[in-house]
Image (cartoon, rainbow, N blue to C red; front, side, top):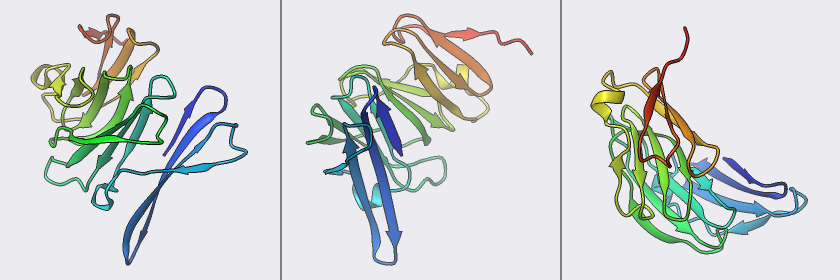
Length: 182
């Protein structure tokens, strides 16, 4: 997974799978890719199935590590960094239900998680607790996909869930279904 921020910064999260198990690497460039430096990767090998990396400002990173999905569930752990990935806090558990689709951080403490077979989840405390931003029974009664979620700033964002589009203009306090012409 490649995450870019600004003109010159990018992080590359990669995994090697072999007979001896999995090993992951997290690298950063701050000079547009001319040089790369390895950073600590806090994801455990058993969570090497589907990982997501997000940032709101290039310093605060969110790394969600996800294990193998099965029967509508997927174990997930969240790690946070306040120094561009040089050190990490966590892990904290993310919702086990649903399959990881995408992750967005809109601040150092506010995050958004879309899940297949679920809905849009949010945290306001750096992942210590999660709640449904859009109730699943209203947004995704057919057990479809949620996501991706995209924000253009900390207030305005959109998410697709179960064939519908929802938008917010108040940082996710309220989500409104958008009528999309056929």
